[in-house]
Amino acid sequence: MPWNCVGSTRRLPPDVPKRCHREARRLHHCELAALVWARHVLCLAQRTSGATHQPTRRRGRQAMDLSPRQPTVGPAESSRPKSSRRRWISMGILAAAIVAGGVVVTQFLSSAIDYYCNVDEVGVRDGCESDRRLRVQGTVEQGSIKQAAGTTTFEMSFNAVTLDVRYDGDPGGVFQECIPVVAHGRMVSGVFLSDRIEVKHSNTYVAKNKNRLDEAEEAADACSRVG
Image (cartoon, rainbow, N blue to C red; front, top):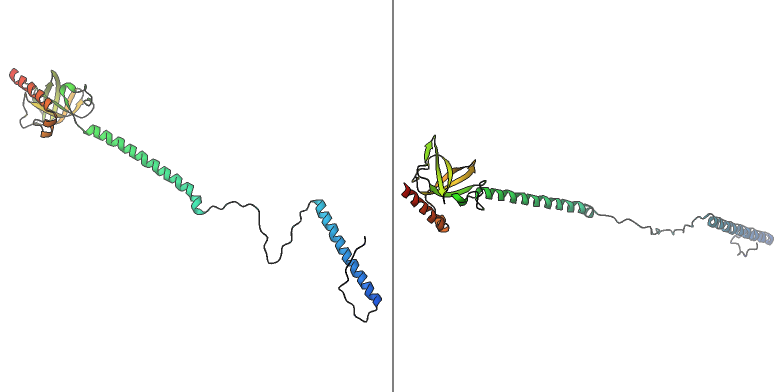
């Protein structure tokens, strides 16, 4: 295979014969041709075997890495799901506590509030259920007051309905037969267990329950006439 080679850069001393100069140039040309041919054969072998050719790097520069990278997550972003989860848990606990507190308060108010009821309304009218605390109004039946061992028992009536009442202690004051009274307490086994008895009503009660008081006064008058 012929090769077009450039002149040799090797120089011989001037005192060497020209024939030697020609031989030296010829030898240099052959060396270059051998190197080029060897490089050509090496490239063909690499292509045949499927080896990839790596580009040479220039000195002083770094090759750019074009491979895909995973996005880095900072500490704030990595902790965000946990913070959100904790926030929802705290809100759920707070909501449950509010609901439970509302139920407890409602039950307490329902049990603590005394509802005004006439004797004939106990266990009949809404709000006068026998399983809750009540304020029952009625007239003390004539001849029903009995006291023994620090306990006072008597009967209250209203609209021809009678209720047995037991009070621990002495009602005192002007408590007597044939007067309208209000007993505070609960129904237990058919008996109204009272812990407070009112003979005189407050101005607020009088203003709101004038009709009740009028009916109670009429019942008291009827009781007195019978006596």
